[in-house]
Length: 107
Image (cartoon, rainbow, N blue to C red; front, side):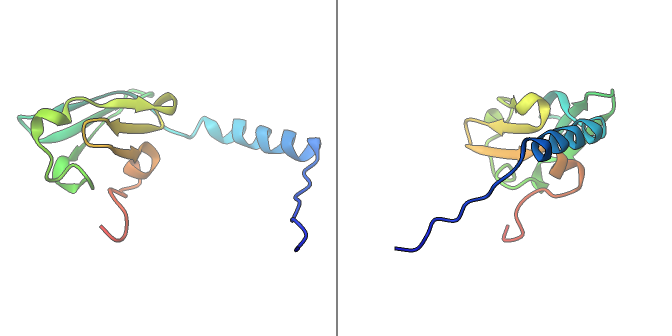
């Protein structure tokens, strides 16, 4: 039987990784509120630093053909890092949306 691979990480390496995460965390944008506007057919994001961002629903994978009545039920995940539509079982990463990635390459 092949030997199981082991990764050994020191406490110092773990502490350094946490410190790096804390340094860059201030640059991560998070959603503080989100809604769907039926009149403009847009997903409206309000970010933690006050900027509003809107994305046409037709551009988002899993939402383009969805019933507009289901689109208003949006959950904010991970302290503002993700969005989830439970009625559609569709989720999107906020950082990817802000980078202009609205679905998978296959989509």
